[in-house]
Image (cartoon, rainbow over all chains, first blue to last red; front, side, top):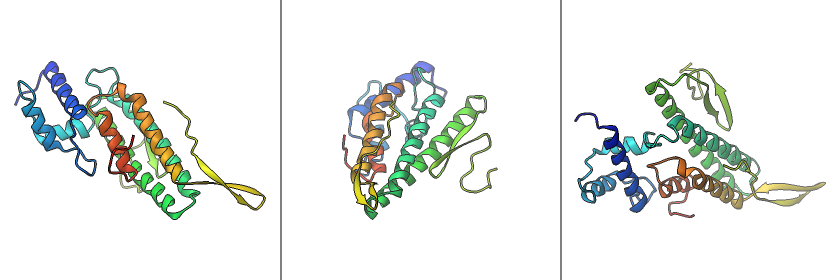
Length: 163
Length: 68
């Protein structure tokens, strides 16, 4: 299939956004039910929006979702998200250090772990975006489990293997 | 977005005064703060809808059902 025009891409994004906003399209565990989104896109729109599951999940999950109106490019949004995630992780870290019960401590640690994974994911997406859009290289905000570290080198995850 | 990240907790008596400890309410405050942030900047982003993002946040905090 050839490359979609900009207008066609925007219409497709709008359709996906409409489905996500107006339908219950998540599994019980909170994950997006891509098959259901795909089914609604094909059945509720005229002409139907035909899209593969892989493409759909890429659009929704892998960062291309941001700002098809281009009021704010992905890298700016990603920066905001990273900032908020890092603040949340710091807060969870504080809670885990002085929690009143083991249960709360464990929950705070779990939140830290999950949000840290989000930080890594957003950071990787940001790097991909910058490469794809040839954005000038700039410092990457990277998390060293609780302490945000700004580095001008490649992403490192607990070891020097990527240095 | 707000930079106010004060977390609720409780003061418990200790030698020479009180110690501030964090509780389940602190976790709840943090979760609510993240959700508030979503409401603040959701207009800036598209496709990933507010309910989806809130579900994802709730999932991070161990909740499976929507709690707004």
